[in-house]
Image (cartoon, rainbow, N blue to C red):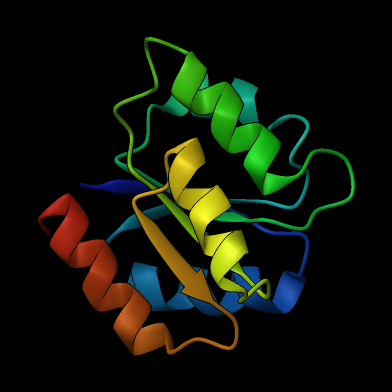
Length: 121
């Protein structure tokens, strides 16, 4: 079974994504704290990470850079899911290594399709 880690500080977003992915038979781990996320990512070795940019402790960009700097994790695709919709924001996300840049509000159905396309499930 494919595994996705979703990191966002908004409980509603986490619940909505978790529900959509679980219905598609994808194993989902949700985290509200970005600070401990790297530990969970190292332990769980997900097939995909969905990451919010704006979080209290560690930004999604900072976490993305940490993941991409880790030789054991750098191949994991990352989707940046964010309210930051400027072209310069998207460029910054792509430069740090995100595979897909998705702005909020977003379509859960479209997100699921992108996840399935990326992880092959």
